[in-house]
Length: 311
Image (cartoon, rainbow, N blue to C red):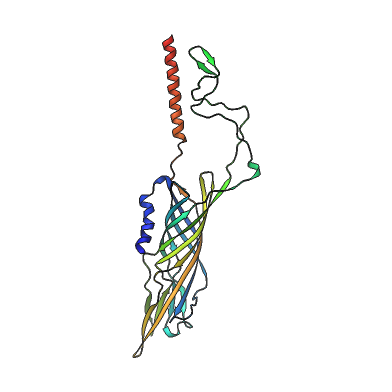
């Protein structure tokens, strides 16, 4: 499972083409819920829900056909809780806990992009000016031969526009829904237990919610105008699944050895905001205009040549 998560995270960067790649730095907050169980008892929450800041970045790759693609990213994680106690048998009632240090997690998965939802307004209803095709089209008032004009002959690249003045139309705001599912992985997790001596007592620490793999799912909202992506709002839910089984702590009370089983589970949700940076290729309109310009030049040179021959 660890290797599969790494493969998902790295596959995008290795083999995507620039025409479909989007990079999005993100900032937001995370709310984690971590619970602890001792000797297979009921789970308790050593800390109430805490909002912590979160930062990250993500690469999105959209396949050429269809509205789906893959993503890979990196972000901070704050689900681990340091559960401290001096007596394991009384740790449920006699403990003090704190949020552990911030970790870094890798994310990867699959994302689907719906068709854009347009936010239309009545003020933007305007008819565009009637205009013939621009480029290598047919028009009127073309010089025919070397001395006369004709209104029906070929025209080298001129466009005919109606007398009505064009009205400027603003592109409406649009939104895409982006449901997503994937996996998260923390490369370096804390040790499950730690112990240190303070005066005459030994303080034990159990790192609850110390997962190394997790399932993630969520929904993104991408706002754009035309083909210009403006910003994204992303909601994500995470559920830890790896490295959260029973862990045994062995302590010594005089000549007696005491074993205490600890287990935990962790989940979180986060909300973040990002501005996408697209690496899409430029539109082929520039190439089309260049081809039409070449055809117009060829047409003009051909006409001038015929005139010189007749003279």
